[in-house]
Image 1 (cartoon, helix red, strand yellow):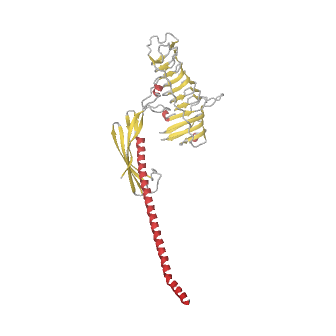
Image 2 (cartoon, one colour):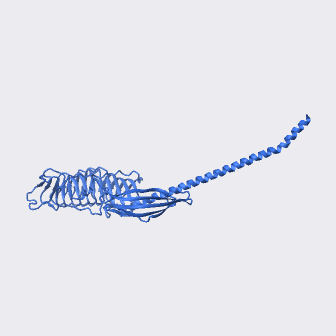
Image 3 (cartoon, helix red, strand yellow):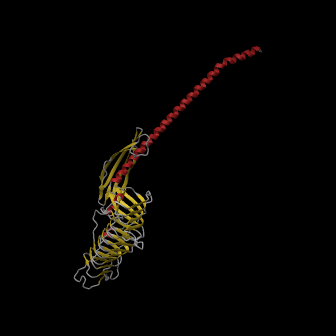
Length: 480
């Protein structure tokens, strides 16, 4: 029995080394598995990074193509006769450093070239872009074709400027009209002449067989041979009055009075609750080379001036009131004084949108070099020696008085619901469209034709332009 115990003890002592060897072997195997798994993980990470970089380079190359297409479309100009302006510098480098891409990791950049050729009055561009991210390159190409398609307008705005006056109903005149006149009325006596009228132009009516002309004195034009044309009935579609901007920062109020040291300049867009100018002071609006937008709820030109400075344009949105001079006992503008808006500037640089209902009175020595779209005004008066150089649309006006020594220089005065009374020594140079027109005293209406280089404000400019059509001819593809 004792011998047996010794044998077992000896056997166990002999197996202690084997256990250690097994443990060491397991550790080695586990270490090898860990290293293998780590290597596999690193390989997968490297492959994933490679795939990500590869796709990023492709997308950067594609973005380069899109940037070049945008450049081409923005720089190509169309006219009804074809292409008028072509893009320059068709080799471009785009990068995240220049702000061209939102991706910044890997210093992405795209080198883009575009070849240009004409074919059958169309422009063809083959755009090639190489995108680079972390020194990995991908190159793609796309081909597009550009075509100029002349616009056709359903509302021919040339009729705004083809006569001295066109009335929906009656025309009465006893002084001078230099230009053609016309009416939509097919009723007798729709054109009335009295005293000593002068007409240097033709008469245009929708029915020549109606006794349209009423001569208050049979001796009028006894020996004058009148040119009478029959025309189609006309309708005038008013341009849409814009919604006032709501995204402008609020800038409080401006009130200028006192000495010249209180003159002020503004050079950014903004919304003002009121602007009040007096003491002959000047508010300068510096538009720079931008399209400046100013919204003002109440513009009070008691005795002051708005000067527009810069090569850009100004859109002035006026809300509740637009006052020159002051207010009378009926709380209506007096129109007195010698205030001015853009007195020394070009009228085609300033457009005024007025949505208030308060009458608009430009009297005294007021001068406005701007086009005005008054959407809700019922009554407009231009009197004294007031001057407006610019076009006027008064969509709901029922009465417009132009009298005294006032002067209006415009392409058109469009007020299809208004009776327009031009009297005294008032002079209008342009075209008048209204419901009823009365020309009395020594007033003179001179037709002024729109020059080819002039555009009508407020209306979409489609009469001398064409649409640019982009036609994909070869889709985006990768070059191996």
